[in-house]
Amino acid sequence: MKLNRLATRILAVVIVLLALAVGGIGFYAMHIGGQGLEDSARQYEITLAESLSYRMDATFNKFDGMLQALSALVTTRFTSLPNPDVADIVVPQFGAQNGKFMTDLGIQSPEARRLFIIFNPEIYGTEKTFMVAFERADAGSLFMFLDGKNMSPAQLIDRNDPSSAWFWRPLDTIAPYWGDIQRSESGEEVVVYSQPVLIDGRVAAIVGMTFSFNFVRTVLDSVKIYDTGYAFLLNRDLKYLHHPTLKFEGPGFREVVDGSFAKYADAVISEKKGRIDYLWNGVPKTMSYWTLANGYVVFAAADVTESLSAVGAMRRAVYIGIIGVLVVASIVVILFSRSLARPLRAAAERARYVAETGDLTASVEADTSIEEIRNVADAVNRMISGTAGTVREILESASKVLSRAEDMSAASEQSSASVQEVIGLVGKVSKNTHDTVSAIEEANAGVEEVASASQAGAKAAAESGEQAQEISLAAEKGGRALDEMATLIEDVSGAGSQVSAAVTELAKSVSGITGFVNTITQIADQTNLLAL
Image (cartoon, rainbow, N blue to C red; front, side):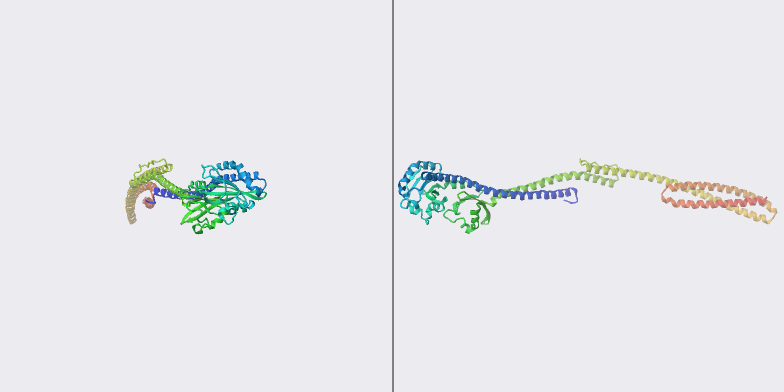
């Protein structure tokens, strides 16, 4: 590929410009698109965590409504603190009157396993647990009355017993409490949710329920984030309530991965929602979290590479697009440059043919629709036509010069003949003059011979006069010939100037000869007079 050719240069320029333009736009689009996809991935993960929290909050809010109903049941029945002395009579009576309401309330929630109202042992004594409770084994079973004989009042208010925190914590905090995961007698994972009931400004009872935790696992396990991502749940103490591999009994969020998440713990508790980027065995990962209304925190964990896989696909598509554009553009440019180069090459070859052969009848035909190339072909044809006209004019001028040169040559020959004739006549005059001088000398020798000599001189003078007249006519003829020759010489090129100068000198010589002849004629006339 030679860079001094039009097609190659056009192809190179177009490819460079396309590479810069398409490449620049492509890389800019990849940058903007990648940034947009990263932002979209972040937003998607946070939105996913939010949606999971809303789904679980809907169930937890239902539980809260059930406890609010139980609390209203107590405060409606007991407008003031019941007398501890009659609690043994009043509480069973209360349970008998409201048992159906409580069981109907529990049936509304498939997750509910137990509903209870336990009166505060700190008010009603620790000798006996005063409670109304109903329990079932699973969602398909009926609620049965629970007497609470196995429940110790002293244990319920023991602040050192974490297993009873679901009871004494609401007493101390006057706030709802979500307990830890426990195993029921049937082996099912359950969680206790409880809240205090205030009468006359004191906690008269604790209402609560236990619910199956399986619904949480069902909700979180149904979520698939990209290829390997997952969702998990922490309680308010950042203990793992649900995780694909970590257990509630194991290390919490602050302790896992050698405590590498501890630096994020405070932000998780205080900020309520956000995103954590971290490395796991050298692989970039992310966790987006959202805090539920009850203080639980749901996380959506994902692999960054998977979340940005669309970016890689976009980049591959852009690269393929750039290559495709360059290939298509190269083909189009090659075809276009050939359509330009072909008629130009034909014009150049035709001009070269004219230059090498001298055939000025040839013409260039531009087989193209491009106006500029047709103009070039027309210009070449006009140049060939103009050159042919110039050559014809040169030939005609040369022919004229040759003709006039021939005329000049003939005039020169005629002038040469006239000059030779003048020279001959001058010789004759010289001879006659010599004879005249001899006659005069002889006349001086004797008077007698003067008459005869004078007659002879007169005769000779007459002959000399006739010859002088002939010389004058010949000189005039030669002058006219010289004038004609000078005119011809002026029409010829500068080379005839030397001939003109020579002829002029010759004319001057002839004029001198004419004067000399006139002088001789005068002498002859005087001699003739003397003889007479």
